[in-house]
Length: 103
Figure 1 (spheres, rainbow, N blue to C red):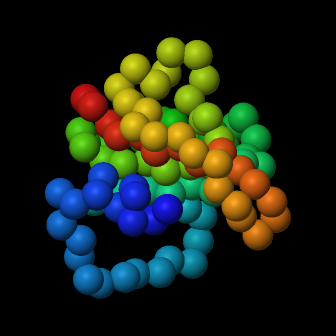
Figure 2 (cartoon, one colour):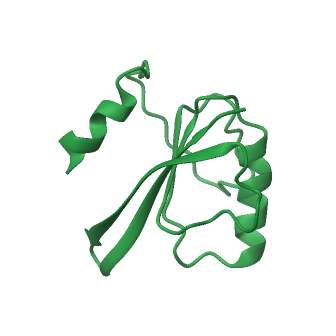
């Protein structure tokens, strides 16, 4: 499955440096991100709302991968859903969504 979807990211130039941060990810600066993954299946509405505000500030072309539909109502006007698929995870199955920012 990874090979099937990896072509989506062919145009992303990855930096070989991996950095880890210990802290609140909602406080971290995401402005240089190319791909953001949020295993957000158990996030409450308040956390999702904060994430959406951070996502709105990102540049066009950024990918957002999440384990729930995430965007309520019409707030996803600037995020195209590229794919959605079921994935087997350690706790069971989940729907995975891949979005790309368009504006």
